[in-house]
Image (cartoon, rainbow, N blue to C red; front, top):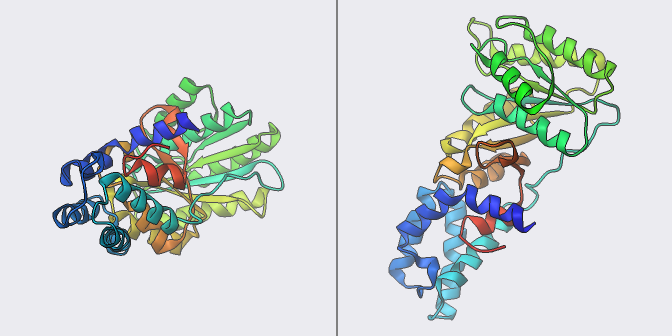
Length: 306
C-alpha cells in the first residue's frame, strides 16, 4: 500500500506543485490566514477542481479557521483531503470477471487519449496478476495504431489478434473474440477507433463492434471504458458525456495525470456523470497504470502522506 501511495504522490506531483506554488507553500507548516485561503481558492480552480468542490473545500477550511485561528496548513490539507474523499465516495471500481470467459473490455476514446497504450498496459497488469489475456487491435483507421499495439505486444509478451491498417474493425473484433474463446483466455481487451478517415459515424463503428462481440456472447462487451486524457481538465467531462450517451460507458480510465497540473478534473467527471474510475495513468511505464484509489488520490493531491 505504501509503494502504491508513492506512485500516486509521484504521479500527481505537478498538481501538488501547482497548489504549493500558488499558496506559497501553505501546506508546509504555515499558519492559515485570509490571504492564504484566497491563494488556495485560486490554486484549486487552476487545478480544475471546479466550483462545487472548491467551494466545499474552502467552506470547511474557513469554518475550521474560525474555530481555531492558529490552524496550520497541514491541518487545512487534511480537511481538504477529507472533503475530496467524500466527494468521490463510490468512484472506485474493481475489474470483476464475467460469468463466462473471456471477460471483454472495450477501450473507447478519442485519438491522443492514450487508449492504445492503456490497452497494452491493462493487459500486462492482468497478466502479472496471473490472468490469460488477448488484445484486439481494432483501431484499424488510425495510421500506425495497429503497429503501435503490436509493438507493445512484442515488448510485453502479449497475445494479440490484428489485421492491417484499414481493415474492418468489427471483423477483427469478431476474430479476436473467437480466438480468445478458443484459447481459453480470461480476458479480451479491445482497442477501438478514436476517429475515422471516412465520413462514417464513429459511434456507428463502435456499435458494429459491440454487435459482433454479442454474436459470441450476448453479454459482451462486459465493460465499456472511456480512456480520457487527464491533462484536458474539465474539457474531458463533455467528452465523457457524449460517449456515455451514445455507447453507455461502464467505467473510466484517466491517463497522463503525471504530465498535468490539472489533476482535479477527476472529481468533476465523477460528480457530473457518476461513471466509476477503474484506473489512472501516472507515468509512461507499464506499471504506472494503477487502480484508482480515492484515499490515495485525495491525500496525494494535497501533498499528504499515506
